[in-house]
Image 1: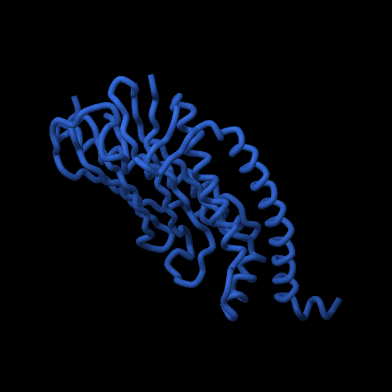
Image 2 (image 1 turned 90 degrees about the vertical axis):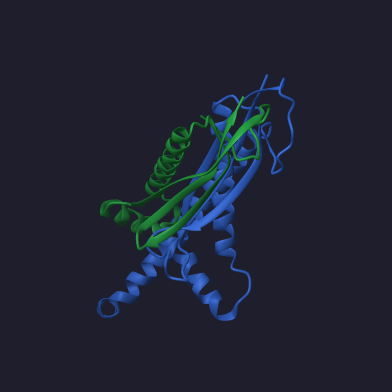
Length: 156
Length: 104
């Protein structure tokens, strides 16, 4: 017991790492499941990055649709990324973070287009930005924002 | 007001150009939300407070752009682009710009 109290900061650090690992990986798995499920549902909504040209008789309406999400990384993965900085190479923990953010943003854009009754989305563009407390420090990413936007086309 | 991010308004013909219109806003979140986001940073996952904040600010930036276009007498904005940058700690700038046009 005395040893625990003497190394109190180390105990807190370990607790945070364990909490981050369990909660973070659970949340990530759940998020991926929901992404895959919704992607299947929205498969019929075509999204293209080209502009295309449409004859005036076919298009009824067009509108800008956007989708955005801010996702943060957990404590444990942040530690892994810092360790990875020493040796270099693929930083898998950040890869999955950015992948999740982009797919979620695209899904939200599709959902908002579906609500408006659109048939397809043209000229989709993706953007990412780092947000939050760590945004100005170069080395730490922490949380990332992904935006997807495009023009929804409602056909006749 | 029709907004698109392609060169034209699909299915319509542009009759007049008015040049660039833009709108921007700088937002910071209140300290409670910042604190909650700090806690959420431990376990990871979506930061809903930030998502909402950025969504609201982006709509605000677009509204300002729209107002500017209306003053020019346009009825559509084409080729809209977004940009985000963090200007200070805890504050983000949301920026939208496009070309104001009049369609038939």
